[in-house]
Amino acid sequence: MRNTFRILFYLKKNAPLRNGNVPVMARITICGQRTQLSTHLSVDQRYWCSTTGQITGRGRAACEINRQLLDIRCRIEQCYRTLFLTGTLVTPIMVKEAYFGASQHRTRLLEFFRRHNDEFGRMVGVSRCRATYHKYRCVCRHLERYVETAYRRPDLAFDELDKKFLTGFHAYIVQQCGRKKNTAWVYMIALKHILMLARSKGYLKHDVFAGYKLRNEFVSRNYLTLNEIDRLIRLELPAGTLQRVRDAFLFSCFTGLSYVDLRDLTRRQVQQSATGPWWLDLARRKTGTEVSVRLFALPHSILRHYMPEAPDTPIFDLPGNGWCNRCLERIAAAAGIDKRITFHAARHTFATTITLSQGVAIETISKLLGHKNIRTTQIYAVITHAMLDDEMNRLSEKIDSVYPQLAAAASAAENASCACVRPRRKAPDVPKKPKKCPKSTLRFVTHA
Image (cartoon, rainbow, N blue to C red; front, side):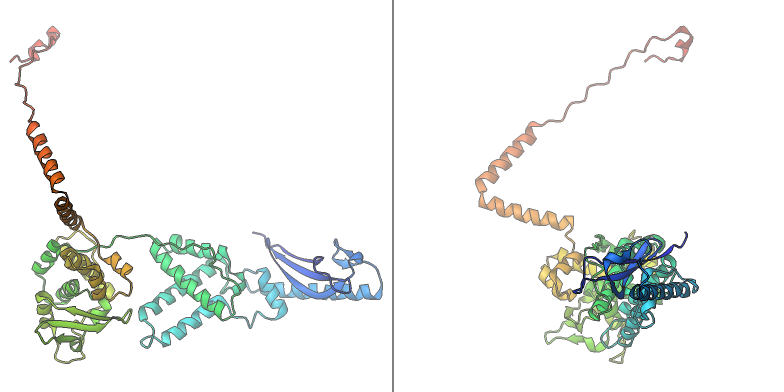
């Protein structure tokens, strides 16, 4: 596309000065994009020629104004040529910044993002999570590639960010990078946080995300049934990583611990109460909530098998979460489980199969999982059809006990209707007469 560059001087007639003069503005237009800047000059609009962008007349004052306007034009053209020779896509805002000498000192988007990541990385292990640090770095890398591809520049000024930038980056993540809707939603939330920080520090003057709707889609979470848990328990695996991952996954199914909490579990967090049962007492890494979970027979036997002697040594020497998920895929296939199983599915199994299906209250499940909001627990704990059937049966018994006469009448009517309905008798088979056929085909007809 042809790179068009124009400079236009015009009067700002809606803002006259006290002496009656009108300010002179300069408009920079490049490929349809434009920006305005003040020349800090004012003239009498009666002597202004809008065609030439100059003062008419040959007086000393008119010549001085025209000379200053020519100097401003030359400076703007010089800034444009300097930026154009760098090989980047030049915008009017870049030319304006170069004209005022602010382009070398103004903080830009990617520069601010990288500085944020550096500060965040220094706080990992202190007050920040490493997984969140990796997420911000991933978003920053995608943003760098998008700016390089769409704008052909190494960075963007905060003044250039608008709705078109957001929609373009959102589409780039989904279409070019092949990310799912929820992953793109997570990336856009991270970018929104960065822009909010930039706005709080004064780098960004307006909220770019104002009116921009971000929505995630509901995804049904997999959980194991009691039959599938039994298959995993009975599955014979060779000693090694697969067996360790399977045992850790089963332990999480019966305790509700997340991967990171299970990975960091030590002997100090396993306590025996005065009455005899063993308990896990720990604080969740994600929320810092205190969690106390009683150990049943199966998780306790798994714990005894892997319990180290040192009190601060992790009990389960697990590989990374991604590698554990790949191991679980192989384990599920070997056990005949036709589901996509990840390590996080153990928490959903604990919430649905182990607790909610056995009659545990949702408030208790929320406490066991370490949730601060019961709405989060409702995502984990799924009401199955069997649970719904049992609840409706109990409700039916209570309602029938309140109205016994109506219940007896309805039962008698149902029995009577069943007695009146008799199975339809099947008619005896009667041999059908063969159809008359042409003589040439009679030899193929067999009579009964």
